[in-house]
Amino acid sequence: MSKRGKSGRKRRGKPEESHPDERWMASYMDMVTVLMCMFIVLYAMSTVDEDKYVKLRDSLATGFGQVAVGKVDTASGIVVPPKDVGKEGTLTKTPLDLAKAEVDKLSALKESMSLRLENKGLAENVQFQIDQRGLSVKLVGSQSFFQPDSPHLSTRAAEVLDTIAPVLKSSELDISVEGHAANAITNYPSVWELSAERAVGVVRHLVENQGIGGRKIGAIGYGSSRSVNDNSTEPLRELNRRVDIVVLSNQPEQVRALIPDVLKARAASS
Image (cartoon, rainbow, N blue to C red):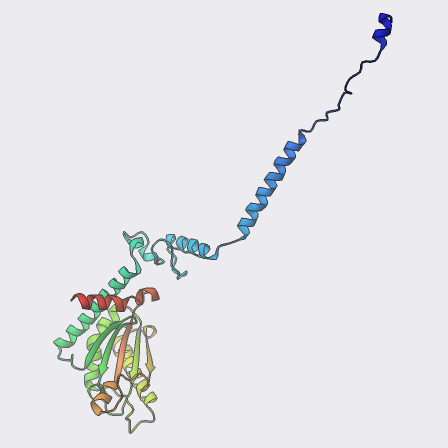
């Protein structure tokens, strides 16, 4: 065979393959990955943890000195009033610390009133009690403070009220006057009316004669529903004929709930 014949023969081998440009797949995969991440983030944002949201909100409220929230925050447990924002140690006080401070304040009011009554010889039949509501000044015994079966204040009752009124007024706290009666009335329609009118009589005296603001004080009549004993004897009934002047604590409920524990601890250590 001639060389020409050899050279004209077709070469045998693998056919040439076509390789189109597939680099677009890498960009497509990146885009799909980014879209997946975006939808995961959107889903996570749509699921709100209510508890964490409330804590965050209250923490911000503390920082800006808001009091309308009325919730516990993560900083100190208490939303800080605007007047206390920035004061040293504000965010470090626990509810127990605030309860101790409240007991100190109520005890100071008690000592001030007690001393004023003793100096005027009026301390008899006036009892004091501190509890989670605040400070109660108890005018015990109708014969000392009211005429029998009558809502009218005695001269001694007026003197007692005039003596403690400056302390009540200076406290700037709300006051609840609560009337009580024993189940042994003879000349009055009911124990409810008698107890209520006695409470109203005390309120009127404090407002009209001592200048205590009408918005800071109110009257309630409990009749005989909150007796301290069974009314079985006249001395026991006399203890149920009383009017309680309650100086109400303005601390949050979680602080006031700790006041009895503070009182017990102090009584045990004394």
